[in-house]
Image: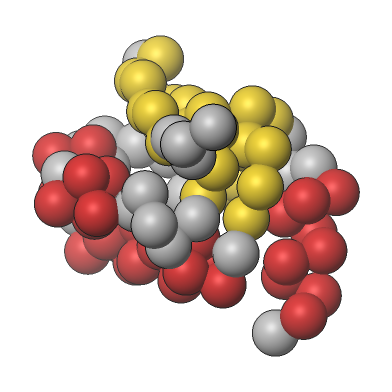
Length: 88
């Protein structure tokens, strides 16, 4: 099965689903400015896998929101995200 990452907007929330894996991050990276416009929360509850590339992308998304004048919180942080974060 090919890893996938999808994202949708629900009001001021960016909902990520699938895998935050370096092999599938490029489309969200390319869309990060538009994707983060007005976002104050990133929902990770539907993330099934994370690697260090995915963590780096999350850091960039939060930074992008700050550049746009928004503070961002993470919600739905599951064990997979916590484990990946614990390695670094």
